[in-house]
Length: 537
Image (tube, rainbow, N blue to C red; front, side, top):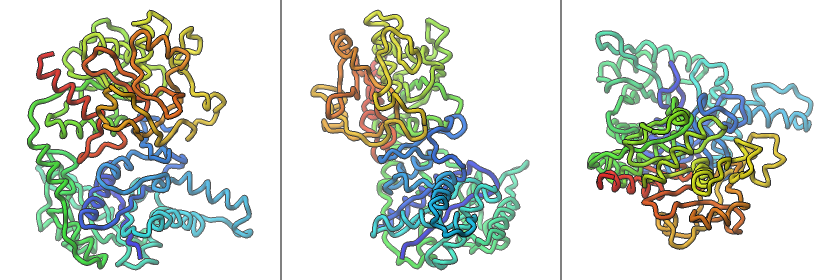
């Protein structure tokens, strides 16, 4: 029988449920268990694809093209769990499926209700992940939102039913709460007590508590929490503020014996723990020397999570290159009104990430031109590659109105244009070129050098492409086409000639980067920026 672990949160949002669930998954994998991760999101959107990055952070894309919550990115970075659209369950998906079944008459005329029809649909989706691979041992289900939120109630009720139906040895509740610090440095446990009470009112008695606190909780505090929440004293853990990196959290939990307690409660025989990759990663973190300043020129700079995977991939690359990566966040709109980009003068590399909409585009083009002309390493991702093409058209070929049809439908030189299959699309949700696709690298390119294989499989999320109409003129002027789709119909990568490291790709390599294995292009980009900094530019 599969084991299920339901991770919920209380008191307030943004406590780190995703990191806690991912860290637990990493520990159980270190014990030799086959783990699957699931995120239940209470929002009524079908997926995260149409949400503003300002409201929801980045959209994480899976191989099969699902546009999901950024927590799936945490799952991918911490664990080996395969991820697809099945691993992201939203209220919108659940209600859509139930309503369609009702319209088809599949409920035989019965009144359709939250219980049992909505909760049954939720349970069926969780069980489908568990049964997808017969070797699956544990399914970790993170329930988004905070206990007490009206949107989360159906998911918590489904969890309650599964815990009851499976038995305590096969289904556990892990609850993450806040231990705030008030004036004088006193830690207060009352919010945690109330949070657990709210869970108990839902019919769920947490088996383990993970307390988010500024410092490690002492034994007296843990016993007090255990006494007032009906949780075993050895099942109260601390997720304290680490001064290193979130990737230390699995080690923090391991030192507190979190995985041992979970195995004991699930009746799984004790297995040897292998955390060598995590300890090796922390050794690389401690041995970094020097600093590389990377300027990220984007349009969603106020919210860190808007470019979450990009920032994490840069950190991973720094680990592999032995340097600390300092993120210099540059709002592209601020570059539009200046001819001297002061914010770029002190960076060792420039990265332009993906994005949509016209705001700040001219600032990105200026950043691209500056990096090209000064020999500063440049990395363009998705929109960032399209920016390279527009810059080349405007500033090398002299087409002043060169542009993307996304931003200027009347351009006489639309060097970036809408994909043919997107021309008649009016429904934006889940309709872009999405998911894993093959790219074929050309010989003698930096792209091929990075991957070491001409057949590259990365994930896409875009509607616009390098316009084939201008491919001949662009390449005759020196722009290098570094990769194509297998049929040669679409340009997947461009590189600047006679430049230390100037490369743009249409895909998103950040989605597959891990702290134990940096994405190849991020690794080489950071290495180029490091070498430029050490050479004194």
